[in-house]
Length: 292
Image (cartoon, rainbow, N blue to C red; front, side, top):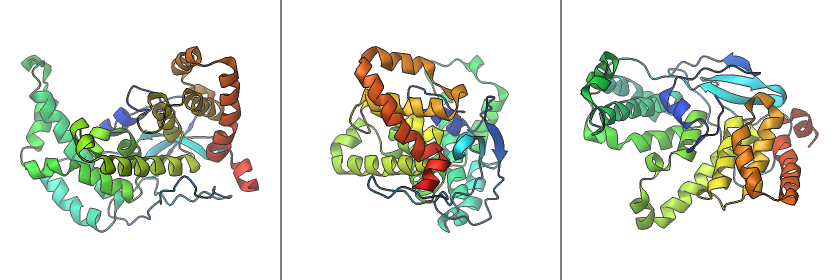
């Protein structure tokens, strides 16, 4: 599901692993077995050459997508971790993850994040006992054998899954700074670490865009609007949204476009339209890409 939200487009969808979508895209599910090896999709730097013809991605499509003309797509469902006791699931998946299986690595991240969310909800000061249904209690019970070290490694598993080429992990890594790096105090203590994180996250997004990810386009738009991951540039942010709208009118984030239009002059809007053509060609125009 592609939508522009406060933090990111697909962050909540991917983390919850439960998204359904209508719209103009063609649904495609490529089932992936965590026991099967998969290739790793490399991240690219700012100056990397544009793809020519066939997409460079080596992703195994073990997540459900909606496909759009020109090779563009958005993630509908990133998949879910195996059911059952969390500690047992992680123990079974870890050898696969350590051997390079990005799906297994991502599933470990999902399992630990699922437990973190369940426990944090249970201990929330604002919550009332009546707020917790049987399914929440069962989720907490499945997590009781995890150790503090297991929870502390949540960011490690996300980082590893992203580096192994898992697209949902890369999108979360690029948007969930607190999980990937830490809180503001960590940024102050390690400014070089923050710089490295930004570079890696932006490389993931650029690679995903070159391979047709509309979700990555939306995240880049958000980044240019809030000015944290890149220098703030509302014109560039608007250009990314225009590229999404051109790829699929059904996905046009109209409300955010209206917000940006309030802060842009007519000449800046015209400039954004020019920029969006190049962004669209890079992401979502196979004919243009094949001619380069």
